[in-house]
Image (cartoon, rainbow, N blue to C red; front, side, top):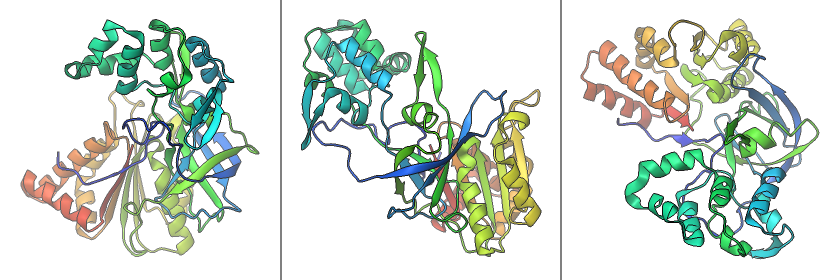
Length: 395
């Protein structure tokens, strides 16, 4: 499928999956922002907890616009660090040099390296250290799918436990680990409405694997464990390709789950600026009762006119699952009419299913209501992207 470029804002995964850069510390300064709010948005019956978090940027040089992302500098759970060191048989106070700095191996594992999800590089590295024939076979280029399944089912600690190696030097272990990278979250607030504060929406990541609770570094550990009054190290990552149009332009916003976060910022910004352009939100969630996040915000925006239309897709409330793609298709004629009238279209959601599904549905809508070929519909979307009227933020 021919799709425009997109911002990648991953909730709790490394920003890059390249080779480790051992010896070079995580680049870029950050600001220790005070957490001013941290609460659960979803109801008790929700199967996917989501949180609203606000940080105070007062005293920093950080500035943002609606559409930008907040980068949280991660720190690994001390319990995970302790567990890994125990399995490796390495003392936590052992000293290493990392870049220009000297630190304990415990501090390095806490602040510099990914120590949960294993990479293909780590698998190959551990195969060499352990001499395991099984791991060597998994590391072969032709075993891509088998390797992916194995890495989904086994984290670094599981591999170390299954293939123990005695007498290792800390540097020998660290050489196979990826650098710990910031996590990006779409900002869910407008600086025009709440100066000096930035809000984000997170989905709590926690699951059991081999009988042990595994938590996302930021979304599963740091965010839930950072109450008001604590601090998170943050930075702002500008996203110039995800920006509001002129105040008099209409916008269609399509988001699912935490993907509605930037649209909360868009509506707040338009209200603060007194924008006259019409706004339409097509929102997806699991259930109306427990997962309709920011309900009060959307209802207030409907009441004051800064949100002109709201269409909802609750995937778990009916006999069949309803997604934002279905709502788009259902209102295809109106979507195409808005686009023909100059509206800008925004999509925010996951890269695996939602974003490609929405793109494919848009092609269908344009093909049907624009009475053109599939190739013509795809060219229409490319034209919108060139005009900055089709922008995506996916993770």
